[in-house]
Length: 134
Image (cartoon, rainbow, N blue to C red):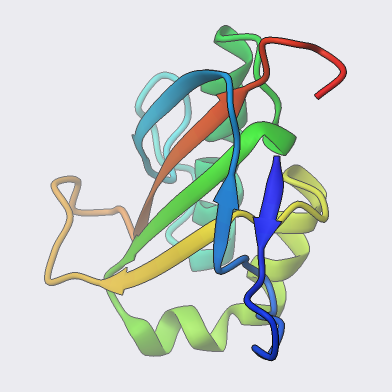
């Protein structure tokens, strides 16, 4: 996997502008802040982020993938201001669960999510190398 950073561009913080990778594609549907039984344990944005990221990692594991294989993330948030206010906590749980790997990423404010208690939803694409040394 190679990070794409055009010459002369300011390095992004917390994400990459682009990623190129070769291997088996793993697509993870939108994960929200409930557990594997569909139960919410918190309405707090950071805690829902923690659970959504844990859900992402659990689905990746089913394909033999790890967070380092993530090449793209899309975050759908209900409230841009809530997301920005939670940056510090979101960053902390992101590093705790995903590590210091920053794929190509987008964050989009949406009018609503299907689950009323959900504060965010995260979609992921991962590429698992065919050669374990890649």
